[in-house]
Length: 167
Image 1 (cartoon, rainbow, N blue to C red):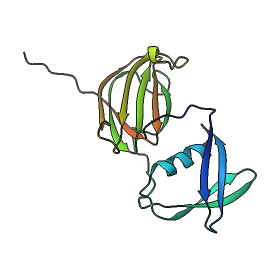
Image 2 (image 1 turned 120 degrees about the vertical axis):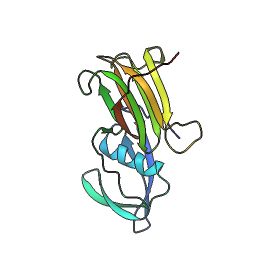
Image 3 (image 1 turned 180 degrees about the vertical axis):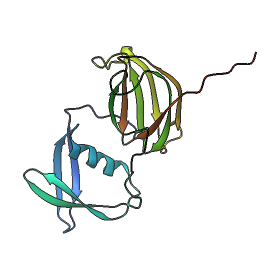
């Protein structure tokens, strides 16, 4: 499922603790806990390990599976989030290459308006479905444009090479 969750939405997760006790957690999207739970829920091939999650005022241990090590961000890699060109990122023409996870890359004319009419570029990126791609090539990004990376996606950003056309 490659879809974004709007900030401020209430999400419910069924969590099984190491003791076998099950609990339904309700969290608001856009928080660190919600982002981590979404990441865990969207990665089915993970081996067992413990993660401390702050639930309410107390800290409880939540168990999940994890076959892969957690991703370590490297130079020019962007995780899920919203980025403004000219402020957070330089202006230019860029290639976005899939590194890990599954989600979507979107470019909007302004940060205030994320409606379909203001969408300049949108692509599903990942490794789950055939319709998802691994690269977004030659995306023109101008000052004030907002880049959104949704899901549990990590992409690498690089400047697009100049096009050579031989006619």
